[in-house]
Image (cartoon, rainbow, N blue to C red; front, side):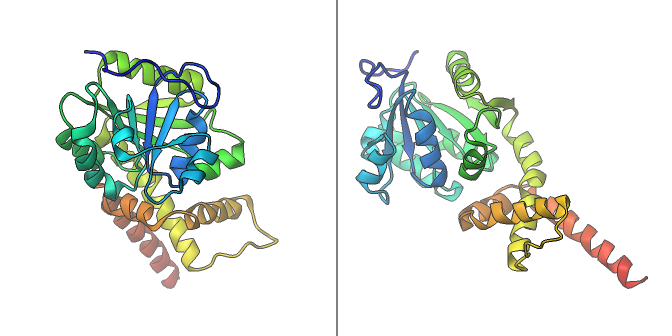
Amino acid sequence: MPPTSPAPAKNPRTGTEALTTVSLIGLGAFGALAARLLKDHAEVRVHDPKAADDAVRALGVTPASIEDAARAEVVVLCVPVQVIPVVCVTIAPLLAEGALVCDVGSVKLRPVEWMQNTLPPHTQVLGTHPLFGPQTAAELGGVSGERITLCRARVDDDTHARVRNFLGDTLGLNILEMTADEHDQQMAFVQGLTHLIGRASCEVQLPDLPASTLAYRRLLQMKHNTECDAPELFEAIQKLNPYAKNARNAFLKAIQEVASSMDDA
């Protein structure tokens, strides 16, 4: 059954008919980026008790109550992974039939499980992980050509095709399809190790030096990317990915073995 929704709304910026209504729950760094990316393509509502209405309107989107946000055709959870279970319990009785609920977290197994188990069966669930953030978008002047993973959970074919078309054709993203389990296995290395190295580089206050090589400058970039992250992100990457601990321990063991071989020289 297609989503039940009112007559198409007008895009508040362009005055034209919106493609859909999209709600962002959470207006942190990524939520603000999502608002800027979506505002010309949909009627965008934002719910974040910590964000002033004027700050929301300054992004060209509409502040909304949790009730209004939950009634959108698409609801995107732009909150820390740790908060997703609470948000799901809150919005579950408010969601429209056929609504699509997505998350944008750095781990996928647990968020997808939480959404499927908590949200009513008449809603659709899609796990997503944009492999970019505000820093990348600022440095590159946009997100076209960047990658996003989709972990299909409970989505009908038509909705899935619409999401793919929008992300790929409209936003110019490269789409990677995988299961939540495959995603977390890969992210244990892709993010688990890079954020570990970046956080350690922050702790030792890795300096920017005149004689830096390309490899060292890349290490400094990892440090720079990590030092701007919220603590909740690092915790989610390291503690909520079931594969992260093994990857981390194997890496630390290898470092210790390499260091020990130097002591024996």
